[in-house]
Length: 78
Figure: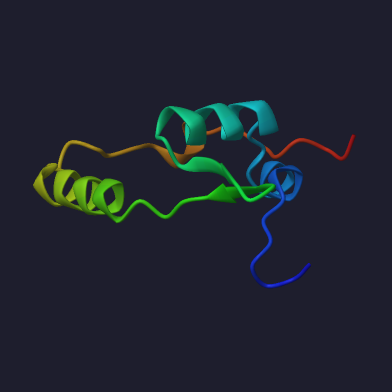
């Protein structure tokens, strides 16, 4: 894969997130653009900074999880 190319199917396989959900999320965040015949994913620094600021303010002290309660496994190849 060329260094500046992104394939939603590959992201989907790595994350187990449906490609339609990936695209619709990027659209909702206004991170997709069609320019000069190409689809582009925009790096929105304002969204990144906003997320970092929110995470810094969150209290993680109440997020204790019992690992034995997790029963997830990635999907098998289709």
